[in-house]
Amino acid sequence: LLDSNQIIRGQADLTPGSGLAPTTSWAPGQVIIDQLGFTVNQDAPPGSYHLAIGFYDPIYGTRLPVTDGSIEVDSGDPCSEASSPSAVDDLSKTFMISYTAGDRYAGEACGSAGSGSGLATVDLWVKAPSDDLFSLVDTDSGGSIDGQFSFTAVDEGAYYFYTVATDHAGN
Image 1 (spheres, rainbow, N blue to C red):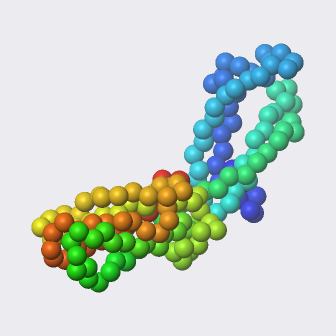
Image 2: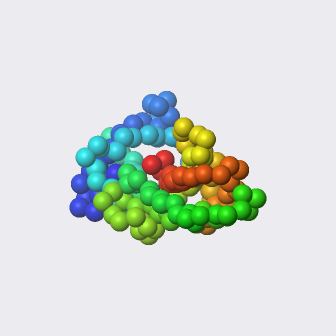
Image 3: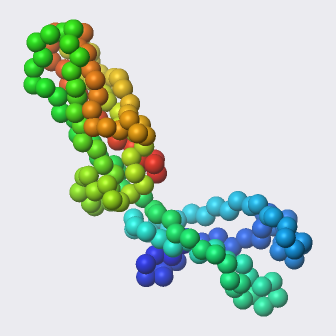
């Protein structure tokens, strides 16, 4: 895994098939499916990285040409903030809790949607007048992340709201 300065930020060198399928055993046209994991170095800053995948000549140790791609490392926390009407005078009336939410790389301002892995969910937490703790009452995910939740109060008194956003990287 290489950063924009070509510094290695993670690496694994293994024989395919956990050592049981060296390339010298492959037949022409044979499809080999394998999984390889590696750890990204802890000092790797958030950002875009280049994933270099390679094979080596078993006799000379020289790298053979293959296709490569890119991935993103997203360690930034997504953000969200809820806002509600200051007062509602009809307990049977459903009202809207608006929220803003966005994903971001570490150190960026909230709402920088052009970065990070993208929002996976936004949760609405509510503390009702008779509650001691907040409770999860609704979740928006995927295409339903639209910046608002419907909520109907059941008791008179002060309600408190907050939202929690989670991105596709699990932050």
